[in-house]
Image (cartoon, rainbow, N blue to C red):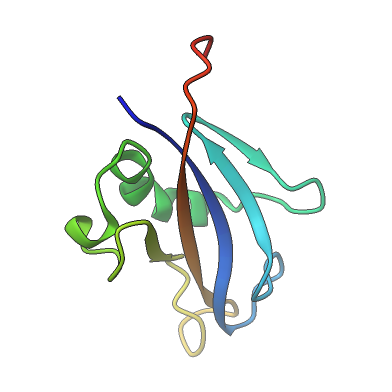
Length: 107
């Protein structure tokens, strides 16, 4: 089975987010564990929104087949915060980019 690393980047922000800015790399998913960037925090709402895509995407299902993107290895998901006028926050769109990695055999 192929193994993948998925890098989670902030693509766009509509409204206000206290954690993320466009262009920021949030974390990397290495097979089954997150490696957050030292200076960033993982938002529970954002992670919950990503899980639907991250499971199959990190196992080899294309973003196109999942309906999360127009390319096989790039998916897009959004956090559930609707922003104004419904909340004080904003909606963050995340870009999930995957790359195949070698199987180290010990993870």
